[in-house]
Amino acid sequence: MKIAVAEGDGIGKEVVPPCIDVLELLLEDVEFITVEIGYAKWMREGLPITEEDIELIKQADCMLAGAVTSVPGHSVVVRLRKAFDLFANLRPFTSYALTPYGLDLIMIRENLEGLYFGKEELSPDRAVTERVITRSNTERLATFASALEGVEMVTIVHKANVLKSDVLFRDVCARVLQKHGVRYNEMYVDAAAYNLIKHPDKFSCILTSNLFGDILSDEAAALVGSLGLCPSANIGPDFAVFEPIHGSAPDLAGTGRANPIGAILSAKMLLEWSGQYDKAALIDASVRQTLKNGIMTPDLGGKSSTADVAHEIVRIIEG
Ligand code: NAI
Ligand code: MG
Image (cartoon, rainbow, N blue to C red; front, side, top):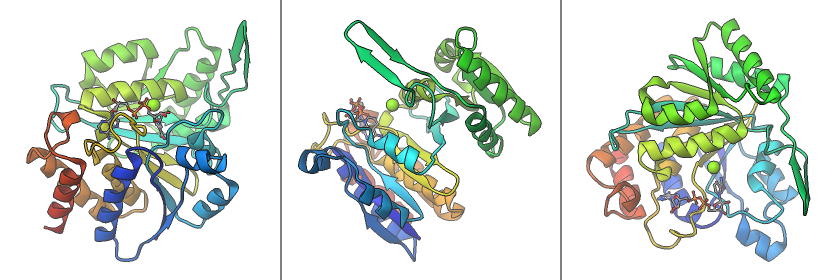
């Protein structure tokens, strides 16, 4: 298996290397293709990601990424999503009993449309951002949601009472889920933000558009205890990019306080995507045991460093 690896900026450089250790331990036949993307590259070369980088990434089966610091006028994340047609952003949230909220939720966030991809205009007195939702993209997103295992109920989150684009999103999602015999309900995004905190146990899977998914993800991350715990997968028809949901956290970079678990669980999602469920389960069990052992970074109230947590996870996998 060939995996493109981009550490990115800030704490990306600290949380990605432990993932390589874990994957090297678990996979007999793996080749890592290192790609440099992000802010530091932009400072040096004027672009945070180049056409050559995309070609290099294409040589791999999938990609593991840290976070990149935003560069004015360029979005590396958007570029990757477009280049590999990564239409679904899958984000599981599990509370591991670290908080009083019993959250066990999968968020499916649309990844290629909505407000993050619309045409924009900015002048001193007026600004416009177009919000486009298409039937074809929504259909494949909802079809992807229908195929997920272990989902009891899909909640379609939208704002169709005011946004026409969400009338289409809601109706297409509902039709596809119904066709596949998946139980679903629907909720306005403001009610969903409220209910996530008030009744977190009511949610099994949220299916939503790009901006709403971005915001609700950070809320769900707070409910499970930390942004640093949460992994994600950006899934396309034949390629996927795995990355923790957090950013480059410049406030933490170089302090040894970054939680590596979100990144390591992203490597677990990579193994699941490639059908290696037994190895993925080893990572999951080891993360759970590490947390049970109280080896945690300060974002979870612990005193351990990034390296302590990573070493404990590796030690448990090694058995
Ligand atoms: P952030 O996720 O980097 O940080 C938000 C807060 O969460 C900070 O207080 C940070 O210390 C904490 N945090 C994040 N990851 C953590 C971890 N692993 N362990 C412990 N605490 C953690 O978001 P922020 O500050 O809004 O963005 C920083 C930079 O990252 C910006 O340039 C932003 O554009 C970029 N970013 C990149 C993303 C990507 O490449 N996928 C995603 C989100 C932000
Ligand atoms: Mg975000």
